[in-house]
Image 1 (cartoon, rainbow, N blue to C red):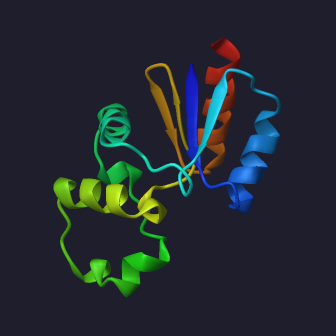
Image 2: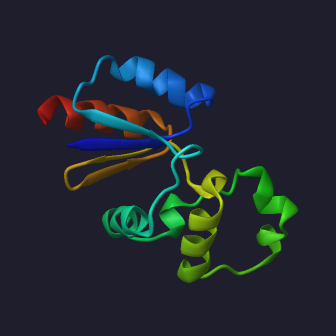
Length: 118
């Protein structure tokens, strides 16, 4: 089974879902309505290689909380993502043992290919 963590009101996430077309095997989770669990985040970090890879520096709270001026650790990235959904780089799609992070063209193409092969 494949899972996409996204925001339903995000235009980019909506566009990517549209590009992927009908995907009956894809569970789409709106992270604003259903928080990411620690287990889910730990699994994503394991696949991605770090919590930092999942962390969005584009989130408005990144600057407002003064995080840009701090040296963050992996534990900080994990804690921040679990506390505030906006810190997760979106969308994040897990297909089996593969993870696709963000909206870059290569990530979306990789997601589409992995879903087609599933």
